[in-house]
Image 1 (tube, rainbow, N blue to C red):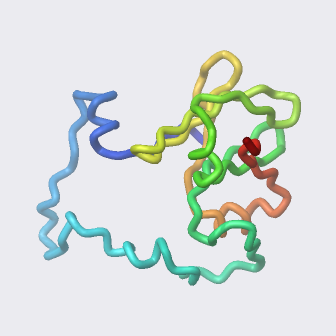
Image 2 (tube, rainbow, N blue to C red):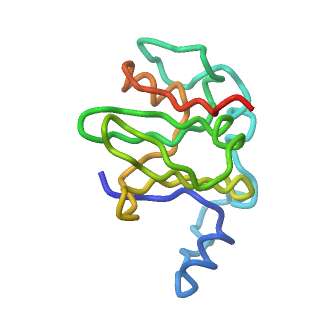
Length: 142
């Protein structure tokens, strides 16, 4: 895996002002201003058959997932929104820094030297289906 980020166009363009975007003129009559999966995000139903589900979070809860030294950890966005960002955490014996921006719903993770680590933002049901032994970050209680 390579480091990647899922963010808004505004945040991306601000960080990478020379970025070009493909045209929405594809030859197909599709409204690119409307998300065709809008209702899917809030539904508890999933499009794909999965062998196991964990109901700890809504199936479509967004999580930042990372694998480090054979250990996996999920950072649910509902947990990230409760803590001040950035913050330090441990995966096994490694200290990492988690960065979350609630306005753009952008999450990344860095190693102790500040280098961005490979990670994925996805739905809880999908992360759990592939990583049943995942650790899960929980925000400290105030």
